[in-house]
Length: 326
Ligand code: UDP
Image (cartoon, rainbow, N blue to C red; front, top):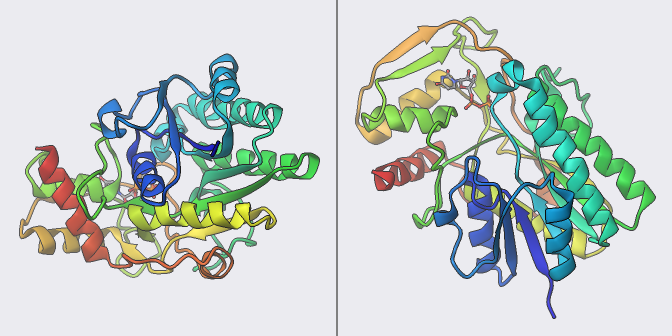
């Protein structure tokens, strides 16, 4: 029988796009999610779904006993940088300790491959942009540290067991399925493009800019915004790469293009045709000034070919989804 691809966090924003991408590629996804931020309704009804925690070894072990798993794509985690500063133990628990349990289950059940959701936050304030994968990792917030420790575990496990992994360091994921089948549904989302399209649609009153005194051309922070569907494709490419027996790999996933917070706001205003209120505030804890991905490794080693490298398209798709949410 063909084996399953276990998607942890498959009821969440990125995980739901991944499940659609796997189905589209003829794979057999199986979803675990604790529904802390995800939604059961977004998981297609024909995909096996298990509600629970990846840090619960009995729960995960039972699923693996009953369903042969070829690879795990591990999304389930907490992702809000300022929250990680005020609740570090929650981040080390959800992101680091739970991943350790999941990996132990994987090793005990002979699961050969893991694709891990890592983050640009492992770099902290890079010495150069675009930042390359072999540049120093010096995270400046608990979120980045909680993810970097998992990268270290993966590297050690791959030395000790017949196991290979791809750690994908996501830059700023945004947008929604261009066909309108999925999007960012988290009610209390904090990420910039989501907030800005909500402001454009009158779902919140304007938007706060957290700092215009950074050493960037307009003073606001620069990020590399990547379309969620291109990100899902990178995971399919990583799966093919690992299945081909190639060595474990760490890749940035971004477009090598940076936009400032003020740039993003201007694009959202232009695409939506709405001039919402923008308030300049002080800096937010844990924010590096600029993060831009060098992406040659993903393009070359994984054969990743982005299709939606266009901030306007990202914003259009995010807006369309936000309208659909009502
Ligand atoms: N940001 C902002 N206002 C908001 C949300 C975010 O100015 O309402 C800024 C934030 O300070 C950072 C950038 O937008 O400089 C991207 O933040 P986000 O939370 O989207 O992603 P992060 O880079 O923290 O993962």
